[in-house]
Length: 272
Image (tube, rainbow, N blue to C red; front, side):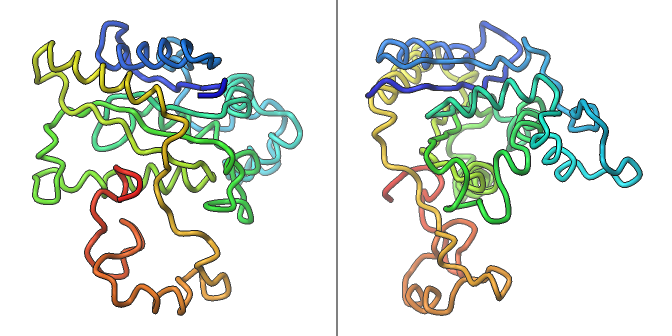
């Protein structure tokens, strides 16, 4: 791997947790390869999760009808965002790869990490109507989710009680990461580490360390390009694209499935 800058956005309350061990493994492995690694330890930082008018240091433009996205866009343009947001945007701007390391809470990220996404990925800085999805601002950066679950892998299957993990990941990987233009690497999922032996946990970490050796060279997940959608028709899939896939067994991906079966492992493995 060429020397790269990596930002790990990390959310766990305990330094002795498996999540912390996964974060530490990433720091050690990537640093050993010559990467410059920064960690945003959200709980240690006491990072504010709520998106409020307090995030703007100057005057808001419309206090009577406060609209967070529009107000923070203006504040970003004028240099009036609060220091904690500005600092995280600095780290993100410099990074080539962003790893979100967390325990899955209620089928998504912890509130403090969602707050990081809500507050740091501001309109104008991270996305705009013209610059999103395949035309996104961060199209030259890579990002990935690395997380633990509380349930076994079988429970997150198409036949499992929790439902298909590919469906669970679509809002995070498409609706946040890909929306901002990131090239999304397949997630690193540690299945129910609290319910397995210490030997099994060590095996999980060794697998993660091995993957980290070639992480930046991995093929990314596949998403449908904005060029496939008709802006004049409310960003509906273009007729010719729809026709091209009409006879295929699976839909394009988890979200744009054309009423067909979901393509297997679409949000979990690249090149499937």
